[in-house]
Image (cartoon, rainbow, N blue to C red; front, side, top):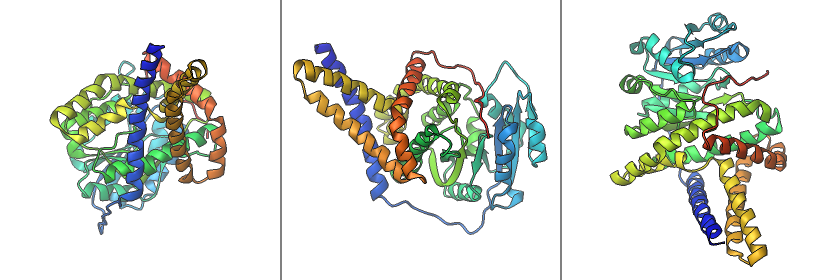
Amino acid sequence: MILIDYFLIVIGAYISLYVLYDLILLFAHFFIKERENVFPSPETRFAVIIPAHNEELFLSRILQSINNQDYPRTLFKSIVIADNCTDQTAEVATSNGALALRRENLQHFGKGYAIKFALESIDMNQYDAIFIIDADSVVRNDLLVQLDTALRRGQAVIQCYNGVANPDQSWFTRLLDVSRTIGNEIYHPSKQKLGLSSYLMGNGMCFSSEILSKYGWSAFSVGEDWEYYAKLIQAGEIIAFANKARVYHQESSSLKQATSQRMRWSSGRFDVAWKYGINLICKGVVERNIRIIDASLPLIFPNPSLGINITIIGLIISIFLSITLGQHDFTFWFSSLALIQLLIFLIGILYTRNKWNNFLALFIAPLFLIWKMGIDLFSAMGMGKKRWIRTERKL
């Protein structure tokens, strides 16, 4: 039983730090006012890069969304990388006024290589900033205006609000909508208010041309966003968050549809965490740099579903100890951690549009958590998807 006690102490301390960190961000959200800047007229020249592998289904939607920006048409250009496509992706791009760059390379396959190809194919001197967005997304009409404001404020790397485009499609998308909303409305804005770095999410990423000219693109794993984020933090850069620059991503509508995608994302994140997480926090401690220490935490701390799963495991074990040995301290500890995480989720529901249906989806959350536990377990063991595979979706 001593080993079990030690195990509970370790995971309890780990989850306690994770929950405490979330509470700090929650309090910052409510009690720190955000600084705003207004600039009279836009001036940033944007290259909007859209990596696309067989994305003819949704590509017209994102290109029309970009074309409808409340922004001078002469100051932005949409560029689609038709990456190893076997459908009409390039033709759809051209018909919607975008520049289509065809890429054929089955040896170096994936989003990271497509981004690098695009950056090497365009004249970077023609643009002040590069905006990267997934082909199955949609954006708000003032997106480029908001990014122009952020860039002129001096922010060189910007992560946009990355929401769910189809939140009401299924119980699965409702849960994801709440989780994404917590990050977009609470955690990332709080880090911005505290002067800390956000992290890249793969979709809705904006870089000044100077940043990409200086560092190039060198992230090619299945977790290319986490990998590039870690490299930028190591180099001393900071990622800003633009809450009003809103991007909405088409989410998978079911567990079956999402499994391959989540295996890829989870394995990519675990790979980057093992490679960069501890090194970053050690670098931050040695340099006494709170920004670097904080920036390492998204790699070291669990994602929300993994956090609650670890808490539930600790709670189940502690209940067993309570019944067999009468030890109640662990039960109270893990129950408190679980309730705090539930409370944060309920607060997140209040920020969503369809609050009641999102609340009802909470009752199916156990199924989601069991599925996600399997995803994280296989990924942590190195059994996740190591190669990019397109996630099938429907309109």
